[in-house]
Length: 173
Image 1: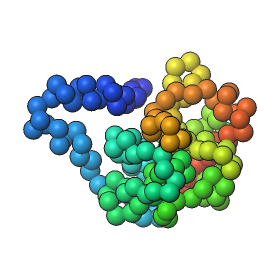
Image 2 (image 1 turned 120 degrees about the horizontal axis):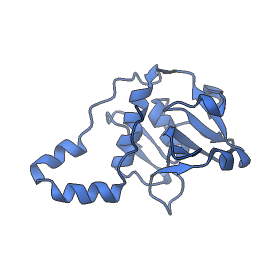
Image 3 (image 1 turned 60 degrees about the vertical axis):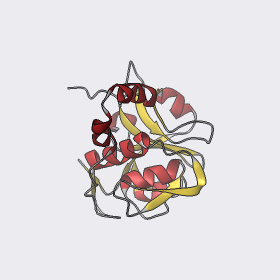
């Protein structure tokens, strides 16, 4: 069974406008993550944490912090802060330079939900799933000019830009 990508925020807002107001809290409330801070985290929890920031539309701002899904920790609102939040690592979050210290290099064909593609000293994105053709779906908190995104990208393009797929050492299936 192939997991379907999330609705875009625009589509979600259009749908929410059609839903009675009493039902809206159900759409906006997420269950707390059970991952232990700085401990083992399961892939489904990583993806729940990613969806939480996506649905909350956390905006890029490296000088600011946002709370995680359980509200107990705050992380930088940049790409590596987002990945650190998803993995429930130490706050305020790792950098693209320190992600290799906590995540082992893997092959592109080994990517699973919750892994990352990281370009040292540049940018990182959270892998979600295979996309159309040879594309992949990623969660991305890239720049102040763009919202947090859930988009398809080309692995070939990422490879040519120096991205390396990595797996967090404390992630479990």
